[in-house]
Length: 498
View (tube, helix red, strand yellow):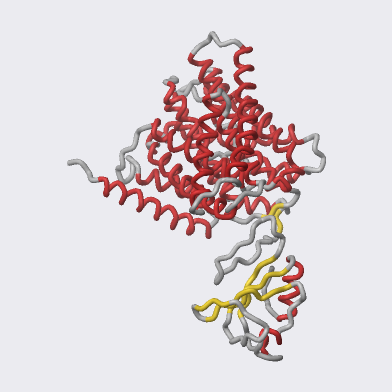
């Protein structure tokens, strides 16, 4: 009996709802939401509830779409002003850091599987391929954990880690493709490998920069009838950028991240709504991606490689990642020992290595399934050990700071563009505020603060000086800057942080 399409929609919606609820619950206990998404996919798979999914090709397609959205959105959310002080450190970690980590890890895998775990034996090229697949930090995991936990970290470490994780996937992808080609054909010369590497990197960077300028030009001059279409236009550009760059022989992932970075730092119409659109879309595809990858794995296949997976994973966490970080950041004296330790610890592996592990499967590489299972096991290990302890490690190293997030508006769905430096907030009228009179003009407000709107019950209106206030009214305030808003709170006796 063929199942109706409604049944598949029902299953998909239930898995999405469970993932969101589990993610909210896990956040309270310090468990990374992405790990829970992955585990829900595993529990729903063939060894759990029995959902059969065994298509690396479809999983790879989902992963490519999700990774493009995550990289583009991550680029749009990154401010030049934040990454400028750590730009060179981030570039070095995202390029040479990946190369060094891949080489050290690959060499360990080759020694381990040829001397200690003889049941699993990888050749040197296979070991280097596996090391390359796992060489980059995962942008989805780093963005999700650092931003969802609202970590405020000293010494510009958060923008450094986000810059590294957002820009190092292309290098890992290049390494992986090179070793797959070397395994498939021994006739490839070193000159061809170098030419391939630079062609992918240069074309990807140029396309990302030029096409991002083009899309800003178009968006600011086109006149669309509906605001939502601007977000759709940006999404269309994202996939055009990836595919066009790839067809030209460049690295599409690099182009997408650079494109998002330049677009996010430019002014364009309906920017706020576009950022919110991509924020929601990113979370949706992170969930879909981790659920899909969880469905793809067969947990019983992880047991035979558990020993090797634990050793390789711990080696990457304790040795290869720290060695790469300490060597490459040693010229930068402003980054102290504790900061390097923290950067080493936030070397999260996540969905990206698993997606990359589907490429050897699709290419028919011997022992590709073994590689996939090892990568999957190490991803779980990394999310459990590193992902769940990042706030603790930041406090242990005395690198964490109190969060400075401003209170969000609850009654007014209003947001100011980033280039407007005014401060916006809301207060609830109390009896103490009305001691000098019940009119708005009787309330002492600084000259640089305006009461622009009032909500009374379910009614919104613009106040005047003679407007009578009632206890429980919600007043929307706009001030020239944050300091003026803090002064306003103080004068009104409002016990509220800003």
